Length: 298
Image (cartoon, rainbow, N blue to C red; front, side, top):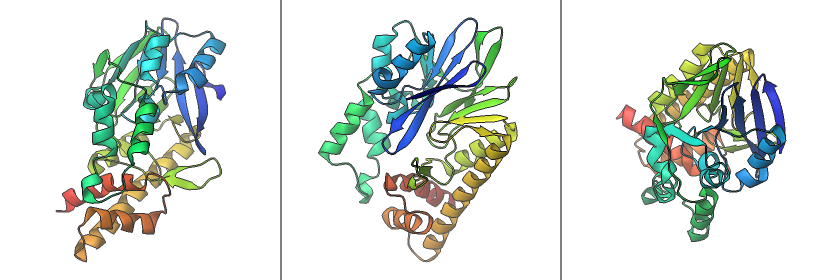
């Protein structure tokens, strides 16, 4: 675990996620404290509680940016540890975040009928264990809300769809800091040694492009994500540009496959992996973007 104040009032809590890492963020104001994401089921006890105790902080509000197991798997445990905290997420991701069964079936197994690889029974049990159990959300967001942490800090909730339909982030207009977590995913997620592991997943190619353009247009001076190091302004612009290029490249592969008469989701997913990967982990997540591009092209 690595705990670092990377900007005034913003602490980054980084922990291992296999051979890569994930980060949650604690934002402190004069009136209240906000935690962004809860990690996996074990993250609260292994990383978040020790970090919060070290900082002498208790979260009043816990914002879940989107429905993925490494971002909301700690919800139930955090509710037990901090019963006074309110939990918030976007309404479009709320169903998956509140229900582990729905998350597993609709976010991680939807592609199984297409012949794409899916977790076996042991894998499914492991994913459910990492999700940590059902937990309710207190506040449903739609984007555009303002969160006041005190007279010194007011944050805007950004609706950043694409990766999931209800992904949200935070924008601090005074400090020009954007916390976007997984809303933009470069050309893949890398391990600590720089090896590409996981493809960018997006369910809506058009929305994902618009999200990337929106974040770039903000011209943040500091861009914060879950699986990449913090980025200054120039690095943030390059990050967004490379992310857009990846989407264009996936669309080109899908278009070529369609023109050659190949429209099967499995086959096109394999084409993208061969030409833009390889992605040794969560390869089938390519299929979400492929399906979206097919729908637009057809």
